[in-house]
Image 1 (cartoon, one colour):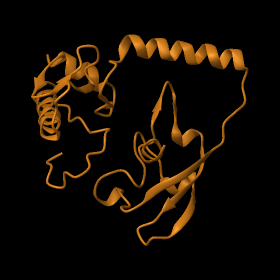
Image 2 (tube, one colour):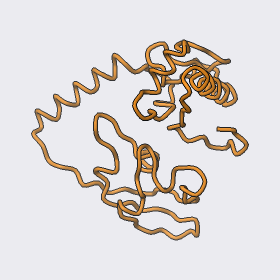
Image 3 (cartoon, rainbow, N blue to C red):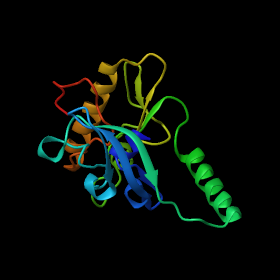
Image 4 (spheres, rainbow, N blue to C red):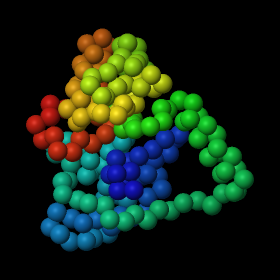
Length: 181
């Protein structure tokens, strides 16, 4: 749940920011404190503790989260959940993926741009761009972190070269302090 909070996960018109009440965090000073929704300064797929440079408050760990959910008709909720699961089953690959690798740029979709760049199925080592959805990068069984990083860099460069669009990562790279991403 921590990653969903930090990255303001969302889909189908909703996101964490819309339902989060408060979060208990371990701060960089070692203190455990509760922070309200507003403290996170949520934005599209980001928050004050996920971002680059001055946008990011480093050193926080999400320990717990409290949500304010709305009651609904159980049959309608089950039907909607079934629709979403079926939609995802037919459009998102199963298996070892990173989920959406890039944020959608304004006015477009990262997966569409990657596909239009001819990269569907493109592979570096054990890392591959899904044949089903261009924004899903997969581990075919033996991918290394270096394979994944190289594939990300290649896809970003190709989309930039062909369309002039700079793709921004939705995922968080950990342990790559020297990464150009």
